[in-house]
Length: 413
Image (tube, rainbow, N blue to C red; front, side, top):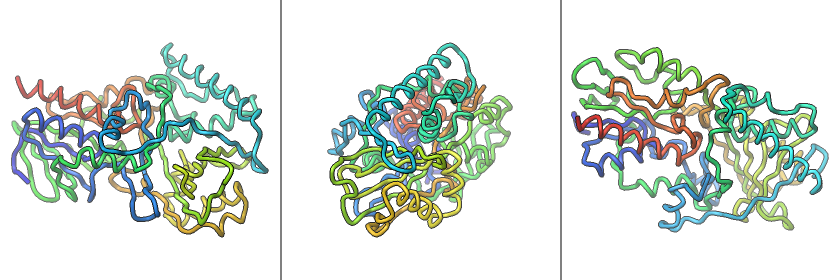
């Protein structure tokens, strides 16, 4: 590791990797530092725990038609599924029919339109205010919303869902989205197992303190997650200004976790890959992806506070809770078909701390404020700073590239 450079980038997730790639191609002398023992951040494909690749984090090419990682997938031979998903709804006693699916879809679309309209009108309140709680599908909508946004609609601003650019093309990557991102940026030099401890920007040169020594630089790009920033794991000297702290206060970390179950046989021989939604009276904020890519597998998705509370207790507790819901939904006999299971642990990861960011009601332009540089020396990127693709890998990627473009202009002066 060099003792001086133009730019230090903290965090080798999609934002940091894209930034380092762009900065290096532009001729900057860059040091990319990552606290974990791998690249990718919340993009991680596990190829060990189950017989097939298992994405612990991002899995779908969201807005695939405009997502640059889709082009990378095509270039590198990564397969993705473009067929629309079938939806099934389980009410705690059994599977509902097509009429119920259509009724829920209509309510969901109408409610989403209300939330989006409120955002466009500048109405920055909780998304829950636009859910008709007298409708029998209200709870399922709220549960699904919490699964997608990683927080309950009572804690999510209309601005988030209303400003998100959605082309309705959500295509899961069969070979693993994390593996795709790792392959895309395999050429980018990075220092692993190198957590940053301090950033002293009081002098003419910024001094970045790491577990492996000090680096002097002209600019720093911070791409770490919201919990890492809020926990003070990076010691800034001087401290971050009040307006930056206020931006952080208006954004929280949502929770999204998974359990992958590998089965002895096809759990639903007459149905292809589909999404099973839970609508029982005691159902948590959770759902199942059944037979992903035609495999004898079921992935349990947990969201919001339920994900935090269950998975913070450890992998065994998370698997046990998911296994019980699996039996309640697909029948007790399915337990005998389970070959192995693997649970994610994002909430317990000290370098992540959860799923992805969520704007609080009344949060306004917090994402834009978080992205603003400080003194043209400290810069920020990551999915939490994206104006219209937050929570996504491609949003994180673009934020890193945008930050580097700003840095290049500043350093050229």
